[in-house]
Length: 302
Ligand code: FDA
Image 1 (tube, rainbow, N blue to C red):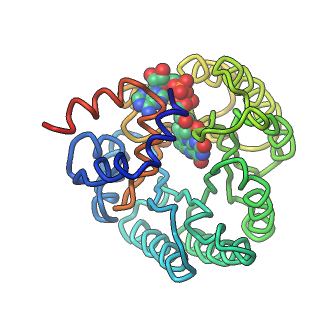
Image 2 (spheres, rainbow, N blue to C red):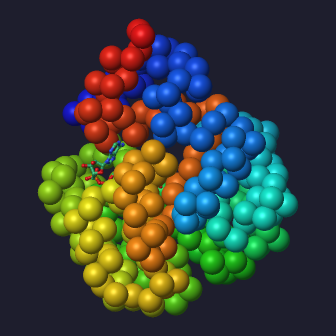
């Protein structure tokens, strides 16, 4: 079902009818803070009042030229300045997609993305916060981990996402489970071929558990990003000190549990996307849960 939906989402009619929805519609706003940084800051403040930390994502992944990539980096820099001026940067960091910084722009893509990422890391440092590199489909993993290594040489607190679905990830977890390293462990949201990723959900869940163990056995800072409560429990019972690890969930999913876990003394961070280019992100959220698609279909014509 997720693979089918992700494929259907690339077709023109589906893209046209879903992306024509106004962002103000409840079903879009469930997962997305709003169209601009003003709405993102408002939601960040409200989450903070509920005891939650935040990581902000400026939506956009299908950029086609260098100027757009530079514009995305500029948006992140002004967001970081705004977070700092609003006194929110101690509990809010940023998450970036290297594709939005130019990674896919031909032979120079990696270089362009790295340059843009450096400027955002610099701005994060000035604001007193951190940056984490999102992980996209499997074809980008080597490039993203290469960029991570270059960034960490100067900014050791730059984090990365690893996807349990990929066969390679246990090895990547071992490589990155070192002092100062921030790893956000996720199951993986992209439709991947069986040559590189576990096709069965049960195998992805088992791989997640093994990766979690590797990260907790290491000296880094595990960021356990899942809404799977059996994995959340597994992380919580490991008994690491507060500040040495964190739980992360997406905005709009398991909202009550986010608050309850934070109230129980667990560090919980919410991934909060905003912006007008929300289609790709939104479709991945729908694909994760058939009930979300039914909800969308029921409300499309209402
Ligand atoms: P699973 O899919 O098994 O869901 C467990 C339960 O959570 C479900 O039974 C349901 O109750 C609830 N749930 C999960 N998804 C839901 C949804 N969309 N709507 C409603 N309920 C839902 N992926 C990636 O490839 N690259 C990345 O960079 C990131 N970044 C990222 C950051 C953070 C902070 C999180 C939490 C997740 C990501 N992801 C990601 C997404 C991730 O790969 C994965 O697709 C989702 O987290 C869903 O997987 P779960 O671990 O929640 O488990």
